[in-house]
Image: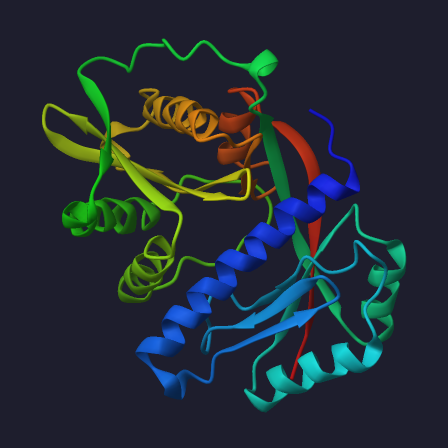
Length: 280
């Protein structure tokens, strides 16, 4: 699969809408969190509270650098909240945008990879692959959310990602809160794998204007290396295609096990994002 700049802009701006929706949910629950959603240069800058994983500026630079007055407004908003501003800049954005950020004192902090899978009919996988052993993939409803979160928090607490860079895993209570907020945003679906009735692996997917965002996949340590994440990938690909999406995307740390897993299921590396941070 090949990614021209217009596809990268669709993917990054869908990510921005997700982060903005989370910030609005936080604001509705706690107006004192000083949430902010600021449109800039076709993208968005989001502050969802101190230390929020969705605090970022994304989707900017595909139409050239934004007006510097608009950028100053965003920087000022983050500085007023004593928060670092992380710009996630696609390698397919205008190089002048990278140069603008460096000139303004943003420091490089790493990269993340964006991988995609075409969902066009000609690229259809054989979705008849059997789920391993006695495992059963199922979609969950809201009443099963707590059990799903328990599995995800436990699994993330025993990370098996590898790769280069990446943020530290937050404390369990913090992780539980952000998982709950994230999957409550419109467009999300939850799915899980059960083995002999026990929920042992989970994943999520959000649909946004033809883009299927794969997120939050994890397996309990005792059930790893059994193909359960492959089954969850296949399940999501089939449902995303049925829903009319034309591309499925996932973001990984460079060189991680997650990247290797999705590439093994037909995902291609589309582009990378450089993470550039300006301190308040």
